[in-house]
Image 1 (cartoon, rainbow, N blue to C red):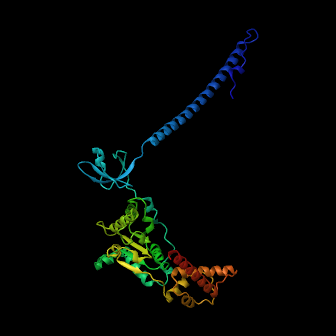
Image 2 (spheres, helix red, strand yellow):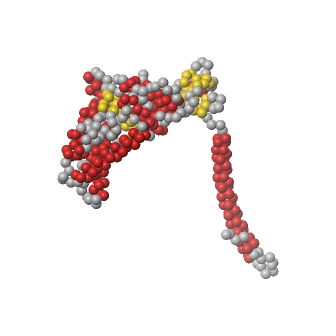
Image 3 (cartoon, rainbow, N blue to C red):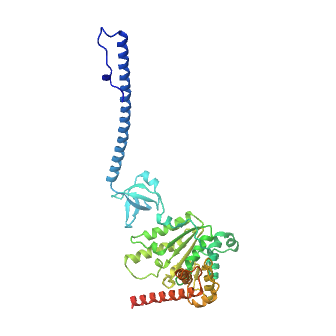
Length: 406
């Protein structure tokens, strides 16, 4: 720290001190005072900077506190602009209201625009028409590692899917020259585990189009209008990223036959289905968007969704025959260390009525049996034991279901 003036002794003895010594002492005292002044000035600058920082923090916290004390705004959609005012529909409860707006606000708004309203339902500001984040995250950014070569026993089905989905996107000029509209969508139906989802993944891998996948159950929501809004946003994401392929798995969750049920849950599911039908063949052109849907319960689907113009191709994906099972065994064992005594034709005959998913499970279980015996090679008996285990588990599950519904 700088010396203080008290540390500097001044010679006051006139007789013993010369004039030069007095001047030197005063000069030293002046230097000390200047150093102290500089030090105090630096401290003052630091204090002012600290004060400004706390002042800004106080203003920010005051502003945030004021915002937190404000009443929340509600989200609504502009339905119609009339001479009497603006008709809005609130999100969540779907209630409609007629509200007044200023001339400046009227110039900014238009039908279908999202706005924020206060407790008196007056429009406070406009909102961007952003799509639901749940719809945006359904876009597949990385292609699945499944190709048509990974699918066995479904050559005819693969050909139809490629004609319906890939060809209109890759060679649209052919349809123009022939003079026909390309098929709008394809519905894959059949028992579980037959390869419906794998077909859709292969399409995503083979095409350059944006692939958007979802499950029908994801469209079933508790609150009124949420499912329908998600359907609209889903198709909007597809329009923004054309060409696009939409894959809806378990479509029976929202497209089951309509009943006379008056429950709010059933009514909401039906609203969602109606929105889906509207998007599939509404007045607006769908553009380069192709739809693939899959279901295990074809018998449950509403007839409205099955008519031509919505799903032009209804493709059954059955369990594979003997030749198909043999090909599937070869596909799933191509990276496995299999003994020479394994005959895929015999395995295909043995695994009668097995689906493609069953065959994959058999191969995995056979590998586990080999590991259990500390072997590096999978033998024929491993596949036989694996099939017996798969059958036993399947029969056990069927017995449990029978007891449940007995």
